Length: 154
Image (cartoon, rainbow, N blue to C red; front, side):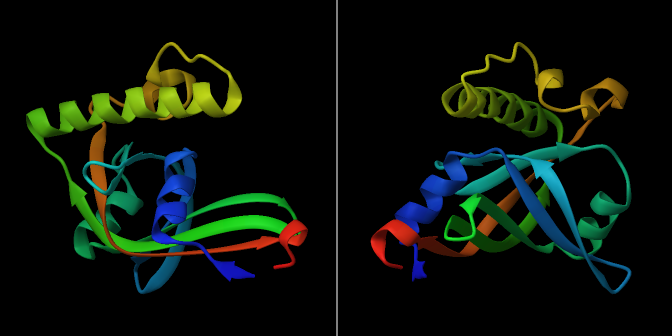
């Protein structure tokens, strides 16, 4: 096993769109999968959600963690864990970030899976039942990556 460099960790974030968000709710750790877009310019994770316990919890305690993995098998995997702060976007910023998220996730899906989604509802069921999504970003404060590759003797 070896540590990923900062650039390798950021690349893993940029090449994926599903991760796990960790937060504290009612004095318990919670972890949920989310669709995300890593914005390299803002050094942030962008996402959105409907109202609910996840958003309520992050409004109360903005400290979160986020993990992304690429797992081929037991001997070949990469994982990035980052720590950051939740920030809810509002008005024009929210609209801009949702557009950035949508376009970014579409590009990642096209590059990774060779699938060409038309609209945001193609990769998230949340849009079908949301009137106004809650758009948020996670400011990355710390990031750590690890990998295991049996081919290189790690």
